[in-house]
Amino acid sequence: MKKKTVNLIINGLTACLCIVLFAYLSVNLLTGYISQALKVILSVIVGVLITLALNSIVHELGHVLSGLLCGLKVNSVQFYFLFIGKDKGKFKVKIKSSGGEIGVTDLAPKSTQKVLEKYVISAIGGLVATLILLIVQVLICLLSKSLILYAGLGITFPITAYIFLINLFPNFAGNDGYLIYTYLQGGNPKRVCQNYYLATALLYQGVEPSELEPSLLIDYGVESEYSVGIRYLRYLAYLQSDEETAIKELRKISDLSKFSTAREEVFEELYFSALTIGDNKFVKAYEDYALSIFSKQERPQSFRAHAVYLIKNGEMDWAKLILNSGVEFCESYPVKGVAKSEKRYMQEILNNL
Image 1 (cartoon, rainbow, N blue to C red):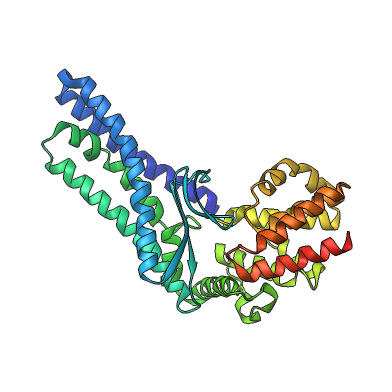
Image 2: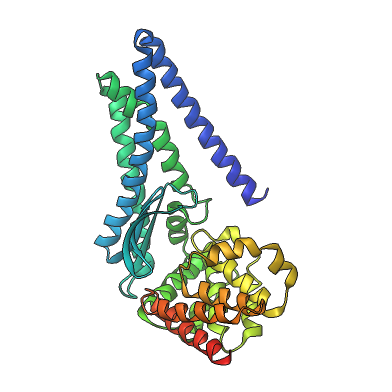
């Protein structure tokens, strides 16, 4: 059975069990307080909204606090659509899509010491925070004598249970349980994961992709989100010196579903490589999606890929503007190694126009 099907079954069964439990508690409560039906229904509706908001806030703050305690720094945190943190070098509070997640926390390493362990601690922090919320809600459900509190925050605990379990199960790439399980599993999966996080930390410190120790860029035949990340880093390492080999490495990434947070980043490079080798079928098929990603301007690679797209379409003046903006963007981009590499690459393109 394919992994996607297994994940769908696990997700579906977990959701169904939690929905049935929530429905049972709601109907049972309504039956007992039929004379106060409107009060009960309103309390439950408001409770659902509050529980969803609390899950996002509590879970992400769990990541933030545990991350800070173990030596990571917070670039940004997002609660559903509310983004708080650094964006294009400036602190911002804005409305932004979370890609369907209840929250997203972007943590960066301050050093190259025990990087994987720090991210594992942060993952555990998010799970523990959600578990505490779940326990509090169950206690309210069991002990509260207030109808509003019981209806609002007590019987809504199945929502928190679902969110906790989906984050705990290691089947879903990119979630907390997946990282923790990979760490506990040991062997090559842990080694690949460790190398990926260490390589990323070095990039933050200013080491360029081409300067990364080759031993960090071995995937050991492991199939995981982190091995896909290693292949992507190999692509970046080769890009400016051996474009043909770089593209071969990139084309090994055939399944973007193995990526959680960097899916758009990898697609962007697939589109850039299609432009480079003249794969017009791919370019035309994904043109609108690519332009929507370029417009976000979230990383230096977006400027480079967008500029090459414009050059291929004969829009040289616009391409120059994009490249100059990209060079300027690199000055404040937090991943210093990538910023240095991309800045030089874009300047070379500019010099050839």
